[in-house]
Length: 367
Image 1 (spheres, one colour):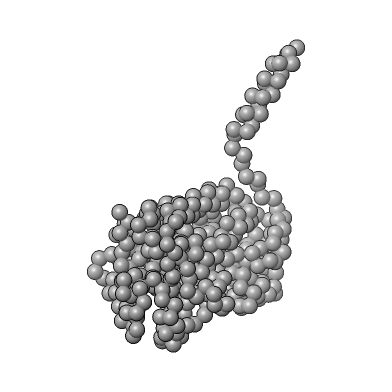
Image 2: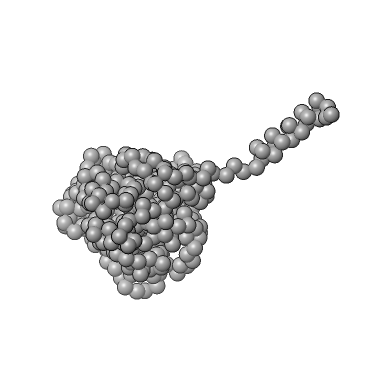
């Protein structure tokens, strides 16, 4: 018979082995009842085999977790972004991201005369919009067996819970945690790099389609407002209660911003660095802002701190890339290397980083 001392030793050794061994995430069990990010209680009856993504954010999240091959339908705008979504260019379109074609989704979902409930539709929450999860679910109700899940991904403060929830739904809990560990590490690097720096006032412009009397910006509660704060800046529109307010150029001047950021999208990953249509367009945007009447009165223009930033990295799964670039703009001496962060992110998606592209204009000095 083993002695009490030997048993104690064996027990202690077993405990050490158990504690030192990584604990695997729990497998998702179905039927799965959850509360989505829209606050809706939904039940997913069986493992998900088919996914319809109504935005680039949703498609990118699914691909990040390793289930891109399950996407069977996409909003039309995804099909033009072939560099980031090469596998989706021939997928069935289901209308615009903000104008969903319910009949097309029903046709994709139907297999023969029935709809097997292994399909989900990923939509934004937006309770007051026709393309919000609740209204999309109502539009698909006549077809039956199609579960709509409300997830946003566009607010940095909610990104972790959105990713965890999607990981649970798709039984990709380990993949979700791998991404979240990288996300937390990347955010921590930003926080440490800008700690103790001065906090500049920032004006972030979406577009000027309404002219200088109706400039589109980002107010309280918007994803950009949160990102500016987390990047070590103060959003001059952060006290405006509208999430997406319109302001005048005269008002911007009174707020005396130290930096001006303007967004610009692209169907590619970033913009060509060399002389091209890209650089001509970007230079034109920057020059228009710099040349606005009265602009010489504010530090952003007098100090040449006007930047155009690649819009597609500012929201969703790669938002920490945009946050790193934004922090580098606001704190140019910070020990931050945005290209490295972007390179790491694209590696998650299995996409090679485009070395000759830029993501901020004028290009940043990252040395």
